[in-house]
Amino acid sequence: MPEVSALALAEGTFSALIFDCDGTLVDTAPAHLRALQVGLAALELTMTPEWYYPRGGLTPDAMWGEYEAHVGVARLPRESLNQRYTAAFQEGLDRLEEVTVIAEVARAWHGRVPMAVASNGRRLNVEASLRATKLLGLFDWVVAAEDVRHGKPEPDVFLEAARRMKVEPEGCIVFEDSNEGLEAARRAGMRAIDIREFFRPER
Image (cartoon, rainbow, N blue to C red; front, top):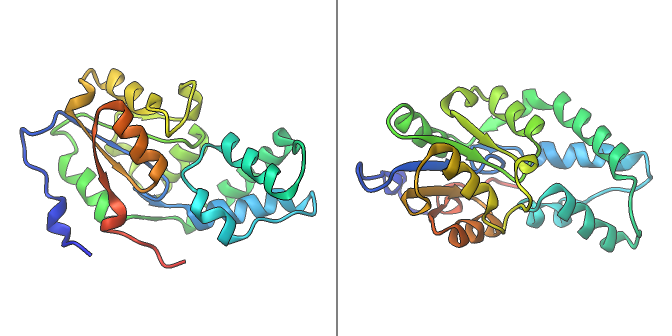
């Protein structure tokens, strides 16, 4: 695994920083999985870690679509399912932990360059995760799934973050932990750092 010092950024070589939330700033995957399992239990269904973890970078709608195909259901009652899932996730916020190696980058550059969070997640959960880990105050902008038409791997969330920060996309560096997010950054014309080179949680 590369040394953490490899994350050192040279001042003047970029205009802004954009961070994914889930798996990049905050290790949320176990909490999301528990909440999804709670939501599905009412339907006498479940979701295994082996199925969920490789799909952690998907939007909620994309994940439900793949899960419906996986279990052979035409369409789940998504509204009630999402309500149970969101409630369960909010109840587990005290178990969330920051990804320190990436959070330290945000702390180091706070107030020096514009910084935003751009996530495929819903705003309620994204902001709650950042608030629970005391990271929300580092960022002036949070772009969530509701703010754009298409989630990652489309570039919309990153381009919207750049627009709000009033910087050109090519001046942004993106921190990501998923293939979908890295592809979105590429399509946005931004440089990207795959944080999996520095942080890999034990599952």
